[in-house]
Length: 345
Image (cartoon, rainbow, N blue to C red):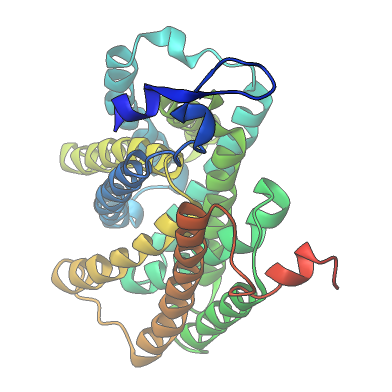
């Protein structure tokens, strides 16, 4: 194929009187899809691995959250998260890779992440693990809703309906008298919103920054913020509890590396639904380690939330399929596509 496309063609250009080539006569082939598919598969592997590590970190935080202040748990978690991050920095080219021209955006994202972890640690200490994950499953819904103003991504009407159904599922799960009702629920939802904002800011910054720089600036902000308010309520940890905090921190650092690298390699809608695997791990860990039993309303609500997220994934994959094979969206397969192109309302 290569030599055919570059061989000389036995004809002359009527206007220039020079030999033509097959490359000039035949439109160039579409770029190969395999690199994009490989990047997507790698991103899926990274995000699934990251969520396994996140569940490990969450379980460790829940184990000690009842005995230590939120700021102290966050401080030691951030301190030990520096271990995998430092290794990644050294292996990735040294501390110079942290150089950035977008420090304000880094600080904004890190501040949002600091707030999100404060909310998350508080919620883990006040609700069952499965219920906590049921609440944070709203992150893909927040990502879809906020992707319009933050990253400029188009969201179809059917996806907006899916977002509404997903949030209705949260209302079902947060029934009065359940483990989801109360400050724990509010904290989990606020943490989920912070996480979604952070991911979308990473996508907004695009390929201009190293993945490890997002993690480092975020953990540095957690370390500084938690350390600033920890002293008045500090409790000297026991060695076993310090080991659990170390596990939480190392897992958190590895999770951030995996998640940030994944979300820079594939669309948000493709990766976000894989977070639902945490529900399985949350139920198992909650049952085996903490003796927690999720209620029926949590299961019903999860069906609505997970179903809405999977539909959003379907819409994105459907659109990507037509982009790859036809280089343009089809006639109105997705709601609103034709109206936008034709100038309709």
